[in-house]
Image (cartoon, rainbow, N blue to C red; front, side):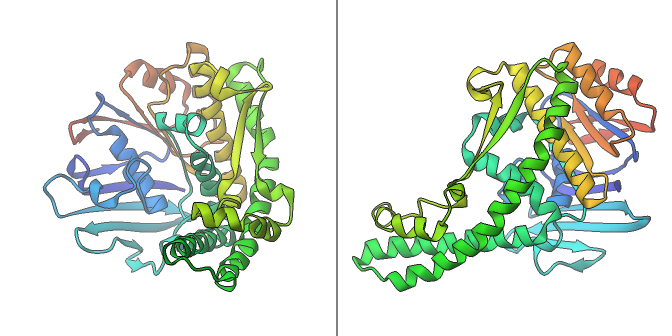
Length: 366
């Protein structure tokens, strides 16, 4: 599976742009701020119905314009897929597959698998637990529709329960029966979500360790520990025991929305003791393992976006990453960089068709 053509109108700093891509390697080169990452984001939009940079859709419309349009033509299972994403101020976002609009955007997730590696991934290590939950939820949702459905319904029930707790505090009332309606939904969907997260991490770890070894030279041991209150059992009982605390704090203090992933280098948290190079290696290995997992489960070779990933890495680790992505195991790849030497080094290792695009302030030249 790969994207053949991309068309943009009023998307971020691009007034209008059209590109035809290689099914192999595609490189965007240009100065910082030229728009390279915005092109990556447009491709990401067509897979996930949203931006990986700015979650507020309206802010992705070009300055002083009223709308944006992103269109992509894909080759998938020997057939052509035309994907359309459009947004006009004051209206809802429209997302279409072969001119037919989706009733729910969640129906599209998983059709065009994609992995992006970007400098902002450092938030997976340095940021809060919500970043790490988002990482694991995104992967599982790509291949498991039931998981995505349960995740949506769990979050909806959580919102309603929190609203009810605030209402109780405002009106100085309490109705246990009203709260139990949402408790039952949380318990049901939490069990599905917890089991899938647990299974995923168990299968993911050996693949992750292998990629880290290949990039680092195999001298370091890494690990991931899934931290969840669900391992304590009896989630319904936990909710009941936390009820008084929840009433005081006016939000739900226990559940899978509190899950976290503990990233470790040896026996220590990589967040505290890892060097910049080790953290970057950790993140690249994490995403390449994610790529492998999605490829195996979905049966499709995902698109791989590498956005300015070579900074803070020594020459050896850069070369090992280049060798990895140059293998036949990977399909269509997009790379951005300001350094032409990095791209030349990549191209010298790749025995495949490639295209290089120069990006300069919203203008693209092949």
